[in-house]
Length: 329
Image 1 (cartoon, rainbow, N blue to C red):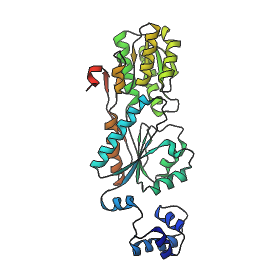
Image 2 (tube, rainbow, N blue to C red):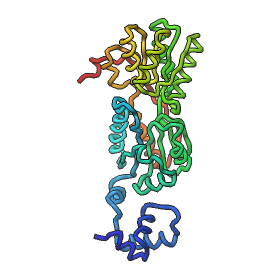
Image 3 (cartoon, one colour):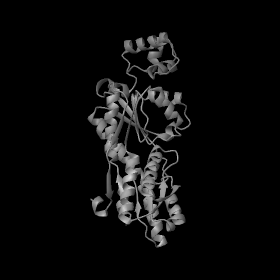
């Protein structure tokens, strides 16, 4: 079997130089690239199983970038749905998929991230839940080296598309439904992460509702944390009519706190995770189909890889009450 050492000897260069050429590292002269590529062709060298798969079976190799930094395992349901939808659609579209986690890229420069992805033979990425503080990812998007689909981040360029639901309208709709059903006049709103794009949009929705209906609105950052939602509820909910939460996990924390306080306040959430069905109380929520979002993102990435240009795709959502009998099987 031909090895990378054989290629280096044939080309008259170091093994590390062969690796750099094969993985598309920058700062390698054109003359060196030609020597290495000529040696690869003459020896019929296949660098790895990835390259072999791409040359024969797969039409591209893509990475999904997930953030598993959540303090609660309950929120992992969303990431699992994302992974399921991505993998199923990738198989349909003849794409090879790997999973990358934010922690794997932590403290890397954009140049190091680019080299890492190129070493994995990546042609496109789907990035889930990017925040405003992910500066390296912002630079990666701006470079347009890879085709990219962003989920829940509204950035678009020639090589980048965005996929999400209308976060502002969805927050407005679920909060309005809860207010009208309960004749509320004051709201405690528990927002998500300060640096999140969805947080920004959902805040717009609740503020628009409060202005239109003349409601008193108190906003506190819950950081998508069940514990923080619980603490804010203990502190502020007695003086408010309704608790509106920017996630189901926070809604569960708020409802549990209200139960311990032995008072009733209507609570609504956002996302439609299965766990809501076990909360013990029926609460309005926005159901996002995370599996479909991921599937649409893969389809969009394939379109970009095939030569399409970036665009924004807005998917639909449902207003639902999660019931235990609806989720058991």
